[in-house]
Image (cartoon, rainbow, N blue to C red):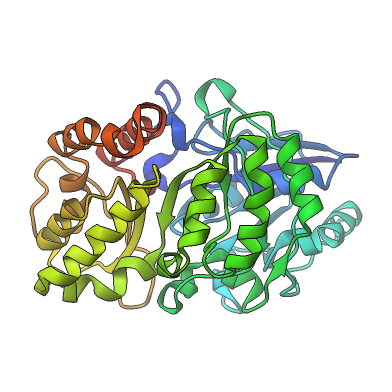
Length: 406
């Protein structure tokens, strides 16, 4: 059976024939959920197309699966209708599809609620019989499949991208769980992978830099300490995610630095609960700064993710606090009153009272140059040249091209 996996893209990032893809190449990575399906389908012809990189072709397929992320519902509807016209069955899956719950839009014919990997065999069997169900409900059972990385347009993508996951399950702060794919798929359930299995996968990865997808390595410090105590021998470079609890475990931080961690992204628990108070308290703002410098002293670059309301916040002062904290990267998300993502894009006349001002100020050219000049003394020339500068310029490019994520 010939199967097509499609990654739907938000409208601002959809590919237009005759133009280069929008967004920095560094962030144009394959969709891992589709790559996991490819790994589970070795006996069928599995193609992967990405709306960020190409115009989707509709002919010659017997089954189409479309991954729908947040803010991609309209794109998925247009895709589905195109395939319906040529009588090709379409199954929708992904975070947005799971978030619909029992109330999907009327145009949806078949969908998967939860992790599609857990019901993939049933979907294939029903597709071969021509009897797809309207809804497949996957159990909330964390499961890991080593993805088969596919680069549909390698000349346009980050072909050095590698990612692994040690722990499956949500470790987000409570206020953002409604938009966390791991929580939507698995609820409170968590699964730890065996150490031997992890080491085997890491050794099989050919490139130097690896992205660890686990949401908070500080949630299980003993587990990660034991793993990185082994992994440091392999001389890899890592990007990891952590919560504010990381600073309670200085031994873990020292082990991460020894194991080759180059970037730590601090999740919403680091800044979100304290932003309003830090704007009024110089002592708290200084504490945030000192924590960033604590990681810099271990030659680790520091990013932070923040989730804010789409209106009513003092965006000018928040931007000033983030610059003052001396972070290296920020990723922002904005939610409306119904906890739905709001797209915030750059425009040439962005004002200080707009959400877009935060990135406009943080990734302003003078701010970047200031970081590039000062950072080698803290983290070294290697990390500055190979990580700080490329990632900073990639974030700036995405923002200037009107992409709200990352």
